[in-house]
Length: 107
Image 1 (tube, helix red, strand yellow):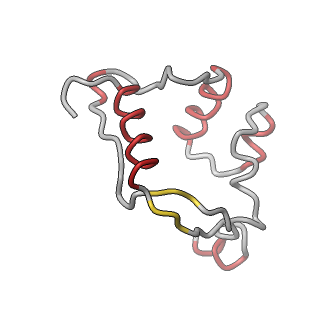
Image 2 (cartoon, helix red, strand yellow):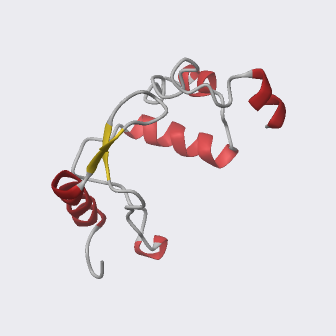
Image 3 (cartoon, one colour):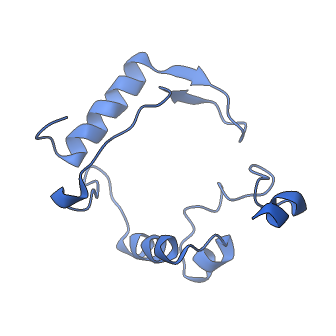
């Protein structure tokens, strides 16, 4: 997608998923409408791809970026900093990988 903003690419992809996506079951037990392999490509030379089509709390962005840069994988680390957007997705009952003894040993 040449000469499009990140917002335009995002909205185009959402429209494509809604128009042609297929319902899939996933490991979390939540059905999703998806297009396998669909993605947005963005050249970071064009700036950070922050979406402006929806509200994004600066505090969460700051905490997430710090955690990603530091390689943090602990939900508690994010929670201790007031960032709770991953709580539901890092629930061991929904996603056991990385929370069970066997996987932790491999990590």
